[in-house]
Image (cartoon, rainbow, N blue to C red; front, side, top):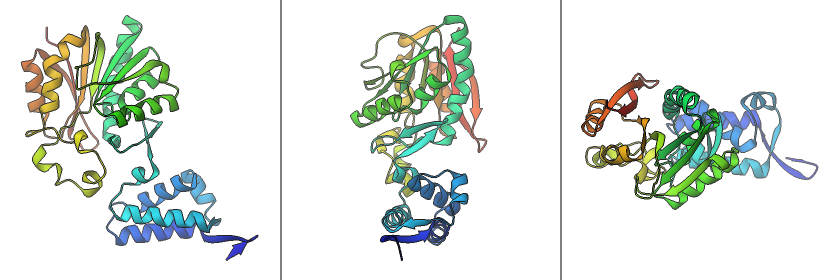
Length: 294
């Protein structure tokens, strides 16, 4: 079919139904959501616009792009990897090959740390944040966006991740308060910070490759593999953090669902005390907050 000489494909509603059907048949865990998010992203439409534009035909070349994207999702590539971006705490963030795709559970770390940041800002004025293993910059940038008195440093060992984090800071107007530094943990870091945050690699090496193919094939292994027992990163942070903290400083960490006791023991052995443990949406322990022990 053609309109004004331009090849026209199916309507938005037809393409959405087709994607949903193929995802369901292909075993995608949430076919309706994935179909809606994928098409909305590719067409540049909001969820509401997907409904109001349902009867509109899609240009044949655009339909071809959507067909290719459907095939990629059926090959286990996550929707947001296909789109190249994901929203985190209301901020649009670009993804790249060496960045972990930010998860909703990680927003709990931001939710948890914001009251502490605001309290510190009320007494200290300007505050300084260190985000260890920054990846896309998600955690640090969300905290900076919500707390105008804060500035932050994001460290990562990956050049690709650091480029992505800098671009995301620029994209969200936070470049003047965010610095990305290549560093293996504290190796290239100077100064003292009010808050240290991290969503480090915390999966035991032996089970990394047993994860869903959406994770193992598309998330960087370096952002997942926490060593033999999953605790290597926590040990690295706990061992040296004291030398980079203000006396009233705090550490906020994302952890695996079964790691509360082990991570707490690691930090207590290095002179910290647990202030708070917060559960995720599945009622699993997900965030720990530490301060220096008295």
